[in-house]
Figure 1 (spheres, rainbow, N blue to C red):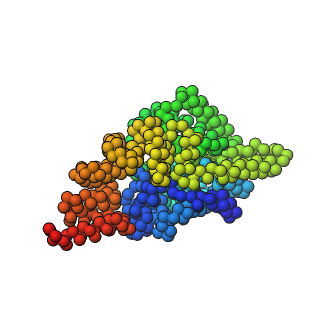
Figure 2 (figure 1 turned 30 degrees about the horizontal axis):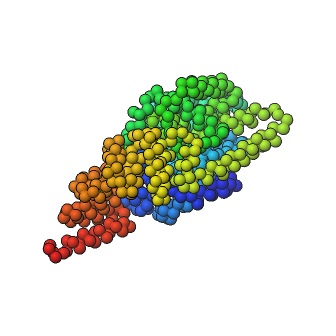
Figure 3 (figure 1 turned 135 degrees about the vertical axis):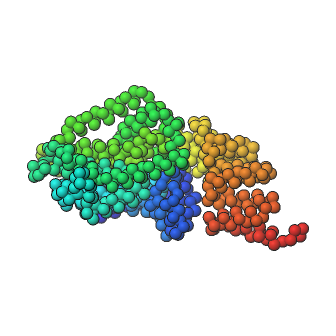
Length: 586
C-alpha cells in the first residue's frame, strides 16, 4: 500500500498537465467515438475499428469510460494512468513475493519499477494508457499462473492432462483459466503482450523450477533441466500461444492495412537488424543511466558499422556469460531473456512508424533487468559481513536517484511545446519533434514560429506528409493560398489516404472559388474517413452553393450524428432547411 501511495505522489504533478498533440488527438481529443462515452454503438465501434493502426479495444473502452465520467478534462485521463501504474507496482511486488518468498528483494524490484524515469512516457502520456493497462492485465495473468503452477505437482499434472498419444486435456484449475482470461484482456489492451507465454516458460525455469522438477533434490540453485518437463510445459500453454498467434496476426493485418508497415520499405532488412542491435543496447543503457529521454527517437537509417559490431559483441558477451552460469545463477539468464524476449515485437525487426526505439517499450521488459540486478547483487554479497546494510544502502540510493531524476523529467511532459522542445534539445535531426512543436506553436497563435518548425522538419525529411499539410495550414492563415495549396498537394502525393490533407486542400480551393475541385476533395476525405464531421459540414456548404440542398442536408445531418455538439453544422442544417421551405425567386 505504501509503495502505491509513493508512486501516486511522485506522478501526481502529471494530473495538472495538458494533452499532447502526438497521438492524444487520435485516441481522445479528436476521436468523437471516444468522447461520446460508453454508448452501445461506441462499444461496438471499439471492437470493430483499429485506432492508430492497432486493434486494442480494451484500451479504447478505458478512454471512453474516462470521457463518460469526466469528459475531456486532462487531469482525469492523466490520473487514470497514474493510478494504473501505482497498482502495477504493487502487483510486481505481489508477483515476485509469491514466486520467490523474498520480501525485500521483491520490494526493491517493485520500487525501481515504480519510480524509474524510463516509465514516465508510459504514465504521463495519455495515449500510452495501453502500456499501463496491458501491464495491469499481464501482471495479473502472471500472478494467477504462478498460483496455478505452485499448487500442483508437475508429475500429477502430467497424469491429469495426459500425454500427446491420448490427446491433450487442459488443466481444470480456475487459476489457469483466470490467467488465460487476463492474458486475453492484456492482448486487447496492447498486442505487445504476445511474448507473455514465453515469460511463463521463463518463470517455469526460475524461480518455479518446474522444468527441473524431479523431487526434493532440486531445492537448491544447481539443477538440471528435464526435456520431458519442458515439452509438457509447452503443451500446457497451447491456449496462451494460440491467443498470441491470433493477436499477432490481427495486429499484422491491421497495421498493413493502415500503412504502418509501409515504413519497412524505407528501412531495408539490414538497416532494421542494425537498429535492433543498437536499440537493445540503448534500452539497456537508459535503464542503467536514464538521461536524454525523449518522446520520440528518430530512425537514423543506418548506424556506423563500428557501433553495430560493438553492440552485437556486447549482447553476445552478456548472453554467453549468463548461459555459462545458468546452473549456479538461473535468475541471471531468466532476467536477461525476459528483457530481450519481451522487446522482440517492438525492437524494429518489423518496422512500424519512423522511430528507432521508444522508452515506453521498456515498461514490462525492464522487470527482467531489475530482477537480474537485484538477485545478482544479493548473490554477489552472500558472504559479505555487512551484507544487509550494504544491499539496503545500494538499493535505497538507486531508488532515491530514480525519484530525483523522475521528478525532473516528468516536468517536460507539461504540454506539447515543452515535451517537443526537450526532444529537440536531447536528439538530433528530429523532424517529428520539429513538426509537432510547430503544431503546438500554431495552436498558440505563433504562426511564424510554427512555419519555421515545419520548414525545419521538411528540410530533414522531405517526405514528411504531416509537416507539409501543417505548413500549408499556417501559410493559408497568412493569406498565402497558392503556396498552401502546393504543400497540401505534396502531402497528398506522399500520403494519398491522408484525409486531413484532402480536407484542407478542399478548404483552400474553396477560398479561391474552385468549388467543384473543393467538393471532390471533401468527398475523398469522407471516403477515407466516413466519420470526418468537418469534411461533411464543408461539403454541405459547397453543395448548398451549387443548389443541391437535399444532398447538403444529408451531410449536415450526418455531421451532427457523428458530432452532436457541432454548432456550425446545426446552424448550416437550419439554414438549408429554411432554403427548402422558401419558394424559388422569393
